[in-house]
Amino acid sequence: MPRSSDQPGPPSHNRGGGPKAFKLTRRDALAGAALLGAGAAADHLLDRPKPSPAEPARAGEAVAFHGPHQAGIATPQQSHLYFAAYDLKTTSPPALRELLREWSAAAAALTAGREYAGDPGEALGLAPARLTLTFGLGPGLFASPALRRMRPPQLRELPAFPGELIDPQSSGGDLCVQACADDPQVAFHALHVLGAIAGSHVVQRWSHTGFVSTPSAGTPRNLIGFKDGTNNLRGTDDQALDRFVWVQSGDGPSWLTGGSYMIVRRIEIVFPTWDTAGLAAQEQAIGRRKASGAPLGSLGEHDPVDLSAVDATGAPVIPAHAHIRLAAAETNGGKRILRRGYHYSQGFTQGAVDRGGHLLDGGLFFLAFVRDPRQFITIQRRLATSDALSAFTVHTASAIFVCPPGAARGGYVGEGLFS
Image (cartoon, rainbow, N blue to C red):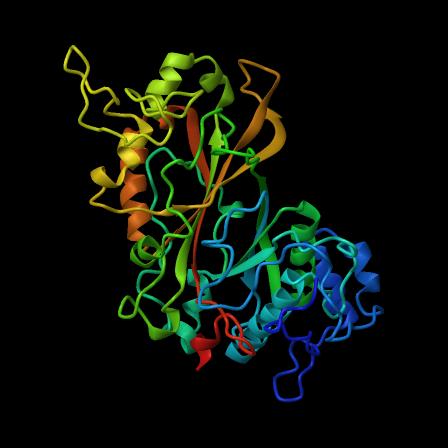
């Protein structure tokens, strides 16, 4: 596939006009590759020739990196996710600026299907696979005096919610990268390259993978068997995106206009409890039919959800504690979020002592994008205290990041933070 005109060739890792903090030494290459468990591959990072700027991209569909908003937010969902959160090991704004500049240059090349300087090669011959790379900045990044005044007031750690069991070792982070692609190896490769670029200036705090199977027609199903995302915001609805997803002028610091907030939650499914609940109880907990996805009391998946409908006894057709009722905009002051969740499976975990054996370890790796974190907080507080689905799930990881707007050609994500 020919290289798009807005995709620059990969720059050197040591620009003459900037700090030399990100010159890729063999030590940094080994440290960066180790972040993704691929230290053996790092021996080749310094030996591969740089591709020519005129080298065409590999065949396959590519998603443009440059634009007013970062790709991977309103982009149609890809089938695989590789998410990584990092702790920053330097408080130097010039070093952070150079890291974001290098990451953006690499992302522009990788999403176009091209190699980047020092490429380890595991994606050679693979199509771009609609790869997107979305960068987020965590609250801790703004702790340094030089950046404190640039922190958006809404960027604070999420509050504790009833019933959650958050693992601090797989939560938070100063920086994050969301890599999404239709090929899991393409997503892994992108994180591998970015980790090598960062070298010793970051340490990977935690990571997660995810998948989603989209049928040829219709809405994908989650791991509890229900259709997931029927009433989600659409990436083509510009009016709704401006209202609920993209930060507008006046919402916060000017450098963030056009960006969004990313909410990250890992939600474990308690499969033994869910599996023994029975179909009727499951449908009552969700508020939809399992097979068709139709709201209770309706026939079609996309029929309007009638929260006022009652049965012959006067009871609500959609129960008071049903998930779709409590998550609906009508019951949350009109607030909505753009969900971008992925399923995950981590094999088996040790069962309770009184049961013995092993239990399936899987659930939802929940990502959501909002104009203001209070949109999510309002909804989640209702769900945590009243949602019938809470009896079958537990939140075990949590993080919040702010995603700067997209980068213009020749620029980089987060550039406004330093101007």
